[in-house]
Image (tube, rainbow, N blue to C red; front, side, top):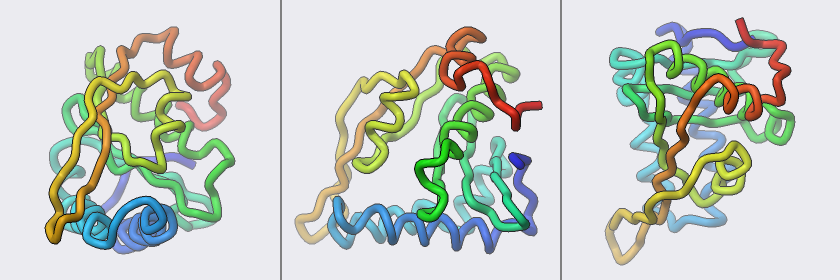
Length: 168
């Protein structure tokens, strides 16, 4: 079930995000970049996204298995726990985030694309518009892309295949 974040979700959500970062990022990013991601997705930053936008959690049997947020027109913090990856949960979270954006009269969303997630976002029709990097110290770089997508009802249906049992 996808639902809005509650403050009582904070610890579980943060643990799931950090577990996913530990699983997915060390093989493609240097150590300092992995630490940067963990700091960027800290409990305080999750609460900031909650205060300034919407944070979704995907819950199965009282376990938070996926998440994503939208603040303004920016989608961020989209994660699916390692054991649940490859089963369409990330796609469902993105569909719900895009639907929320549409309800907020947002016609274009942006997001930052990490190395492990590039193909995922391209498959959802996000267009890479800029390559970027952050110097995380000691000669290490965090490379990523900025992507955008114009959203309208037809694009949302095509992104979800027109069949989203968790919508509504």
